[in-house]
Image (cartoon, rainbow, N blue to C red):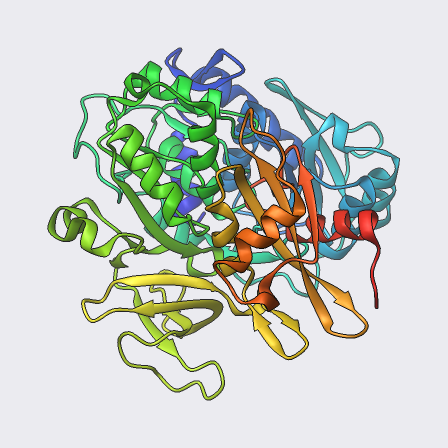
Amino acid sequence: MNKLSQLAAQALERDTVDQAIEYEGRWYSWREVRTLANQITELIDASEAKTGGPVVFIARSQAAAVVAFMALLRSGRTIRMVYAFQSPAGIARDIARLEPAIVVAAARDFGDEVQAAIRQQGAAAIVIAEMEAHPLPGFSRSTASLPQDLPAQPQIEILTSGTTGKPKPFAVRHEMLAQHFAGSTAKIFGGEKEAAEPLPALLYYPLGNISGLFSTIPALLNGHKLIVLDRFSVQGWRDYIVRYRPVASGTPAAAVQMILDADIPREDLVSLRFFSTGAAPLDPRVQRAFEDRYGIPVLLSYGATEFGGPVTVMAPELYAEFGQSKFGSVGKTFGGAQLRIVDPETGAELPAGQEGLIEVISPKMGPDWIHTSDLGVIDEDGFLFLRGRADGAIMRGGFKLLPESIERALLGHPAISAAAVVGLPDRRLGQIPVAALQLKPGVEKPASAELEAYVRDLLLATHIPVHWLFLDELPKTVSLKVDRPAVISLFQEAFGTTD
């Protein structure tokens, strides 16, 4: 049994009526958690799955799924995450590709296509619902062979956010999680060093990605309470803040404007001394509006699944020293991480103040430089400023357009709450920019001519979107990032393509 499995086993030994997990207004005790985890372990053992055979986990954010995750960690098997938020055909394809010995999921995810894929693999299937588990009828035994790509050491194959395409699996070793996730739950964004009784952690990210692991593993392995939301909502987050009055909290970047649009009263957030956000860039005007309205510093960070989480942060002490002079920066490296900026063409390292591609060494993941498609600048004091993504550039007749620059311009318009700019194929120009827009509550839709004139005053004529699409809400991934493939599909449905 590896270290992470040992820690999970120790956590699941708790047999008390103390509160452990809250979901949909109901608290479940550690005794209930232990009982369900033991049921799942018994079903795994009864399946006769080969030792070390991987488990496909179709994880939804609910109490029973969190407990199942803990039981799977205790089992010491490799866990291969699959997003539930896709079609049954997509889930079936993932199962065929991942070659599981066992599949664990909620009842609604075991449709006919999924069952057919499980049967073809010879895998067992375990159904989780409420706080109980049982074998899927006809799938109690596993005859699956061990896959050829089975890793020597157990790992969790989590999923990237899927903002530029289908979410991709990324392996995180049990050893790394035990070392970096399972120790102290101190927040890198500030807060009380030690509390007599730590506040409950709040989970609204999917279990299958890196943020879900950050939210779940440290809390439960340390015996702390966990509040589970099936997905992020401003109301759910606000209720948590009012109920527990933490000194530090945060949300995904996209949710900051949502909080402003919801007009949450200042007194509801009065306990917060720091507000953190990361995983995606935050428009500086949104950051300024939040800070002006609530008087709470916004501490930005930069991280990725491939880094094992954040590698830079505008920590409270940095904010106290530099304040507004570094406004918009995602801070400096921490935890031994290293950054450099390289020329996109030559790969040569660039000096301070020059824009290029970001490369990272994250000690959690290994000693090698990790190449990214993120554009950034490191200033003379070592602070990182993000500039966009090179792989999202739109090539319009030989002109290279960064969607982020057009989005930033549009977000300055008083009617626009959110914007997503993508490229569509064009026979003559190669690509053309188009913009999907979400309006602020209660405002009238501006005319296309007005928007074109507004952008023309800020950017070159080549940057003006050819088509505009107004949506009640921009499509987002489960991580609350804009789902760009979905935006492209909406434009193709509305306008077709010219290629």
